[in-house]
Image 1 (cartoon, rainbow, N blue to C red):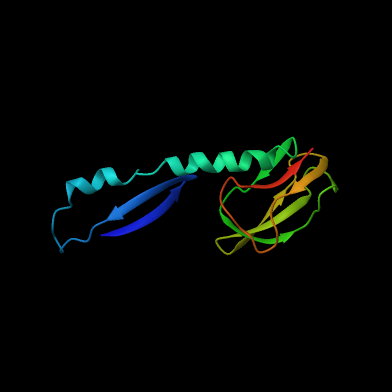
Image 2: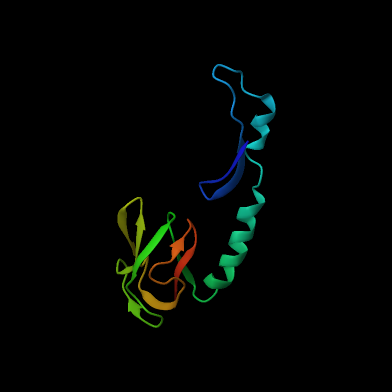
Length: 125
C-alpha cells in the first residue's frame, strides 16, 4: 500500500493506493479512501487571514510555484497592472500584478520561497 497527499483545486486529499496483480479486480474498500482529509485546507485559510489583515486587498497566488523575484517593497506606491511578484510554475514565469492602484501594505514572500495556490503574496491598501 502506498500513501500520497494530493491537492486538487486547493483541497488536500490523503490517498492510499494498493497494488494488485495484472488483471485483478480493484478492491472495493479502496474507493472511499480518496477524499480522506479535507480538514487540512480548513487550517490554511485561518493562517492566511492574519496576513491579509495587514492590507485591504490581498493579492494571492493563483497556482502553486516558486517565487523568482519580488518587485515591490512595503510602502511602495503601485498602479493597476504593475508587476508585484514573479511566480514560476510549471517552468513558466508568471507576473503577478496589482489588481488596482494603491500602496503595498506588506510583502509576505521572499525570493526563493515556495507557495501554494491561495497563499497571500502581497497585501495592499
